[in-house]
Length: 330
Image (cartoon, rainbow, N blue to C red; front, side, top):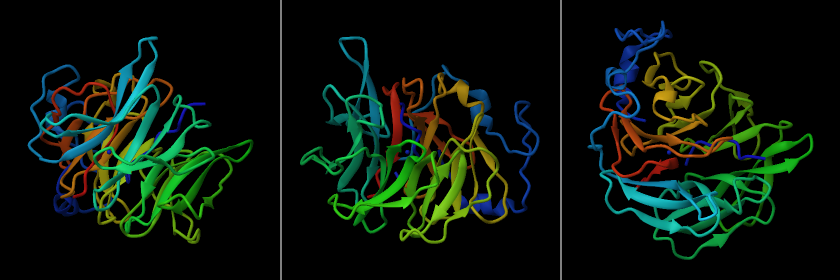
């Protein structure tokens, strides 16, 4: 069984104020002929389809991601790596003959939680943690555990566990040292991709619908959304949603009225096998880093950086097979 796609608390990009200024509950139509009615399309995206050289990102920062590699047996492995947004400083933090993915920075940027196993199979994945330099790796779970994300205070971790049977996948929480594990959400198959927002809420997907829940399990609620969501990321202030559906990556206000901005459309022009896309907000909430996520086809993609206004599409040089990116918070 393949892992379900995850967003990161942990993961496209720019100005929340500009989005809020759009106002209204409807979306805006751009002049691009490829834009669907009722949405704003990015001119830079329309001019830069997959395969066209893109500029180096101007937003400085460190990105952690899963780097897909081909083993000698022709099988694919994935290592946890970091790289600067200008393409320098590429370093493998967790590697070897195994599959590691879904890295998430601790709030202070000193640790990384991720999952690892013999393959991209949820039944063998375990939640692991290490220092930001790759030292002191510790396996936190004994049963299945994957797609982890930190609490805002760094004291707890939310993750997905494959329970099996009719329950399928449930959302669990535990202390940062692996103790105190408990089930938070059991909605009978299909709970996935938890993100612990700085507002204190935990957001997750259930069959492509977005939900929120409090860390104690209370307040479970479905969030109004534009349609089916395959992956998502919540801005640090909890106001904006970046998401991927079947055909585009876009941003829009999470709960208030506002217009969405299409960042990558169609997604298949940028992530060729389109197994899913993970967006990760930059520290200033003005841009996103975007790459593929695991699914039935696990090949990775370039690390794209784009303004939340839909302009300035760029790509980190030298990275062609990335999954699950996340921007370092400190």
